[in-house]
Amino acid sequence: MTPSSMRGFEHRCSRQVALDFDDDGFSDPVNRGRLRDAFLDAARAAHGAGGTPRADAFRAPETLEPEEQRVFEHAARWYLELYGDRDVELHLHDCERPTERGGVRVGGWVDLTVVRTDGTKELRQLNLWSGPRTPRDDPLELESVWMAVLRLRPWVGSDRLVVSWADLVGGARRERTIVLDDELDELRARFDERLAALRSRGDRLRPVPGLDCGRCKHLVRCPAHEHALPVRTPRNDPRPGILRLTPTSFDTWSRCPRDWWLHDVLTVAASDDPASPDHGQLVHDILRLVHERGDCHDAEHVDDVLDSHGASDRVRGEVARHVVRCPSPTQALGHEVEVARFSFARPGLHSFLATARLDAVWVHDGVLDARDYKTGRVRTARVADDRRAWIQAWVLGRTAMERSLRLRLRYEHLAAEIDDEPEPWELDAEELAALEERIRSEVVGMRADLHFPGVADPSTCQWCRYRSICRDSAARGEAQWPETLGVEAVQTAAP
Image (cartoon, rainbow, N blue to C red):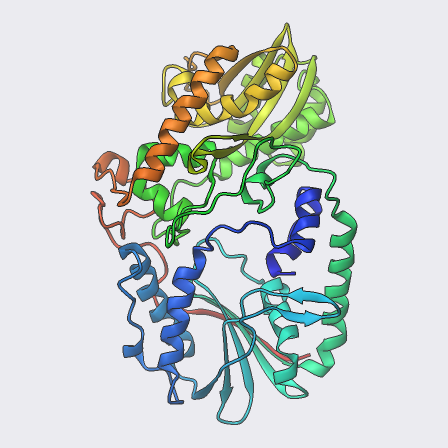
C-alpha cells in the first residue's frame, strides 16, 4: 500500500486496483525520484553536523538536467526560508523500505525526520513538483503525510511530533503539532477503512480500459490489451519501457521535444503559467451534464443546467452553438468517453500504448461520430492535420471496426468568432492501419533521440510552461513561481 494507491481508487480500473494490491507489476522509472533524491541528499548534508541548515550544501548535481537544477535551486531557497531558523539534529529514519503492518506492506516516501534542541521530533514532507494538492489547514489531510506518521510510530512513541508539509515550488507550508498516542486510533481506523474499501473495489478479472491504462503496471496478460508484453528500458533511460501516448503528450512531442522530455517524462515543475483551462473545462462539464441528464434540444433542461452553474453569456452562446450541431436524439456511446489501445511491435521498445478521452461519441447512419469540443482558436484546416487527432482516431478505431462502423472525428468549435471549422476526418480500416505506422515512426524517433532539443522558436516558446528555465528557450524571462517573500505558512495547533 502506498499513498497513491489510497487516492481515487473508487474510480480506477478494478483489475489495476486488485493487482496493485497483490502484485508488484512491471514498474517504469520513477522520475520524480531524480530530483527528490538529490534534494534530500543535499538537505541531509546541510543538517549533517546539527544546528541550522547550511546554505552551501544545497548544490544541484550535474547529473540533473539544467531545468531540474533550476527547480532544485528554487526549492533550496524555499527550504532555507521555511526551515532555516530551526536548530535541529538530523534523524535517519528506517522507512526506505516498506513497513509491515497487519500482513500489508506499507510504502511511500518518508522525507526528512529531525529532532529539535528541546527534544521535539519533527517530520518534514516536501513537495518539489507542479500542481500539489495543498492541504487547506491540516497536513494530515494528505495520505502522503498521515501514512508517513503511522510508519514513524516506533520512533515517535508517546512524544510530541511536529508534522510539517511544505510545497517548495509554490511556497506554502502546513504544520501541526500532535501527540501521536492521541491521534493513533483515528489514523489506524482511517487506514483500515481505506484498505477495506480498496479490497472491495479490486477485481483482477474485470479490466476497465481507459486513461488508467496509461499508469498501469499490469498490462501483461490484460484481457483488454492483447499481445501486451513486458519491456525494460535500457539502463539509466528515464523513458518507460512502453511509451504511453495521449493526444496532448503526442502533440507536445511534435511541437517541442524538450517540452515533452521535461513535462511528460521527467515531470519537472513548470516555471511559467500556461493559458488557463478553466473556461474550456466549464463548458465541457456543462455539456456532459446536459447530455447525461437529458437532451440538449430540451431548452428548459439546458437552462436549468446553465443556471445551476451561473453560466455567463459567453458560455450560453457556446452551448447554443453546440445544440445546432448535436446529432441527438440518437444513440450515444457516451460522453467523456475514455479509450485505450495497445500497439505491439518488434522490437518491443517500438510498442506503444495510447489513451484518449473523447467529449462525445454518437452512433448514427453507420458512423461512429466522435466529437472533441473546442473553445479556443482553429489550429488546422483539417482535423487530419492535427497530431492530437492522430491518437484520438487510432485509439477509437478499434471500437469502430468492432461495430462495423465508419469512423468520423470532428472538432466542434463553439466560440462565436469561429465561422469555419476544420474539415472532419473519416477513416476506414486501411487508413487506420496506415495511421498506426505513422504514429509508430514518431515512437521510433522518441526512442532514438538522446538530447531532446528545444524548438527555440519565439512564437512557440512564448507560450511554453518552461520558457523561463529551458536551456533552449527563445523567450527567456523571470520564472513565475513564488520567490521567498511573503511566505504562506499555516500553523495548526494541537487539539
